[in-house]
Length: 114
Length: 113
Image 1 (cartoon, rainbow over the protein chains, first blue to last red):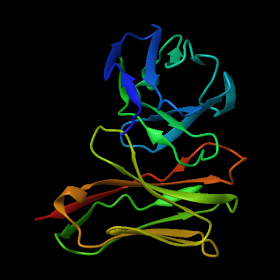
Image 2: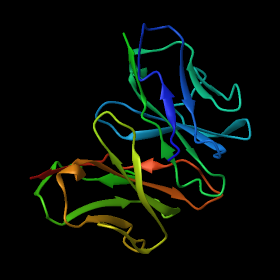
Image 3: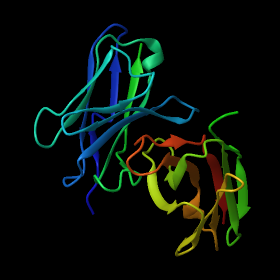
Image 4: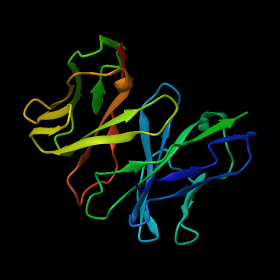
């Protein structure tokens, strides 16, 4: 069964450093998403991406964040200058174009900012 | 009022019990309602989705949506220890509108052998 994969599973970084989280969405999906979950809190939407551009973004997704599809398989989230409050689980998800409500999530990357 | 509310539990039941999990919401634009299962420190796993009001059954799982009350439920019959997880409700507006899923906080379920 196809699945979303994410690397790394755990990333530790120092405050102010840049991090790139990587995702490989399900191969025939064209909508891609990033969500985050701070420990003990809700899963929160960050951004959706379609046709090589951002389709929708939340208030959380400020200028420190960017997304990119650098090739035909990967989808990345970059945080330019990490803050302590960026520590969270980051989930990538993907969906088919005509079923955007049916989003499949990856296992997540746990980001720890020290 | 929060957009999606879900009792975080925890909920502890004996094996074989019927489990009822619920969410309420305030945004009448929501049309698609999903249930995800999340094991500790893992990604949410899509269990099932329902469009608009009504029931949907998949094996031991039944999802119900009552749009008039803005209330959704997930029932698990013959619960098993392997059902122990956090259950998240999520919802989104009509296809063609916003793509973002709005999640509840999740209900932690433990099924005791």
